[in-house]
Image (cartoon, rainbow, N blue to C red; front, top):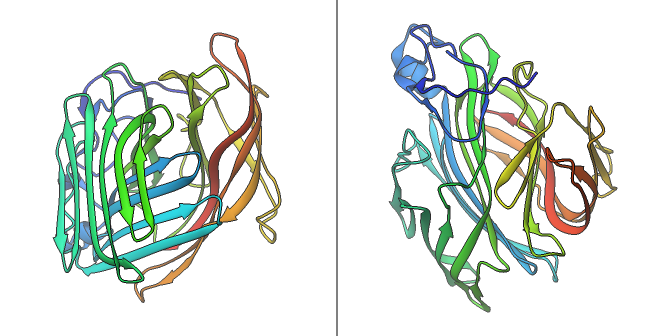
Length: 344
């Protein structure tokens, strides 16, 4: 079930199908969107492509996220800040017609993002062994501007989960998730003024490129934090879309080294999402429970596109057995699990 891709190659063949299916620990496939082929009309192909760079920073006190995305016929730029103590969220979303200003690089390990429009500026710059984020948003909350200047450390030996997943004919998802990047810098907005340091703040990158079906559902769970002995620990789990027979995205990271799992079931009450969520691997080596304390979900309706879902922030407890046989007991690790329905 877990096919590891190790050879450098293009992602899509001339018919728009994946040349390889499976996972890798680093991006080895070259994204070539000019080969997308869901229609004989070139413009339609372009409008069906979805691309995003999503960054999330977790600290003991708050979560901060910034994203630039292009869903073909629309750009979506957003940022949000969740206070874990007050259980509040500040959020702004800026849609742009036809993806105006939202040009994203073809590779996750090279290329930068520069977005500037109507009082909003986002710069995601890739440098040697690090990523530099700069977010400026005028009148982000109650008239106060948002300013974030952050440096994310990404050593060359830091492993990640990369998946090439077929969805249906001509539809696919190519994705890299990087956990546990130490963060330094500063976030300011009104009464918020936080200095971040890598011994308490860790970042996650969700880098996605693909052609999705118009109606889509998925589950995603993630966390980046520290074990009691000080080691960095991250998890990334997913379900709900595509053909996962070649590989899943399910894994944990201990000090940047990945342990891979097969299928993971998301067990939760969709009518009462604040109840505990249980996530269990098919081999029993991963058995976690998330106790939610905040629902960051929302509904968005933009005529052609709509989304609704629940992003449940909480604390993970349970057990994860690594590839070396170490049984890691988790208690109080902050992270999230979500369900998402999209029409896009």
